[in-house]
Image (cartoon, rainbow, N blue to C red; front, top):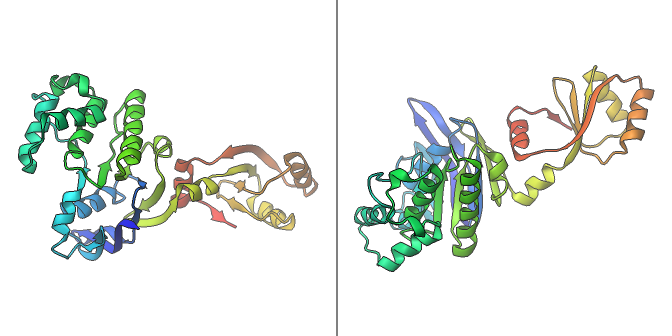
Length: 305
């Protein structure tokens, strides 16, 4: 089941499609890693889903309810979001920020529930400390506490790791895994820190220039980011022909002369065969492709055979 499913979702500003016929699927219970360059449309999609912006065309369903259905307003009460910035009052304490948010949401929490929220985000010892004295990591976790006030089933987080130091990133990462697993909250998270995103995401959506390029599970991504051997050749066209002659099945060629081979090779024997074919090798190395490399290859990548 999908928490969110979009159908040719499009948003134009001044005639330009910032989100361009997007078909997106966010599985229930997943941590959906949303990957894309600045200006790719990630934040705009979050604004569309939360109702901050309206689609120019296309549609989406949330919890099975279409965005044009009046029932979508009730369903949006089951989501929370931190889009672009965390809204905190720096001159107030952590507890007072929760009370202030209660007024905004029109709800009333018990003192026990307020303390529970701070405990979930590991800020229960600093509830009476003013937010202006919080580190950036603590502020981000405080933002998560506010986002949990309405007991959401779906949470949208736009670049929550931006600017955090390694400790802050680790704390936020562990917190998101915890609330996903223990509270069953589906999370849509965008981040430029892909090395961290690949530690928590269970599903991925890659977007570029307003278009979804690919969606896949973490297992599918791990299979694609498998070990490879990269060889730089002096003559890429000759290399292409020789690789075909040697029955290499799975490889990509790149304009700079690199060839990334995914077949399981006996490197010594293979290089000997290349020398026999009079191919000049400039360099050779074995690597495991990261999520970042995979995304860059999707956007700018070579020719896959």
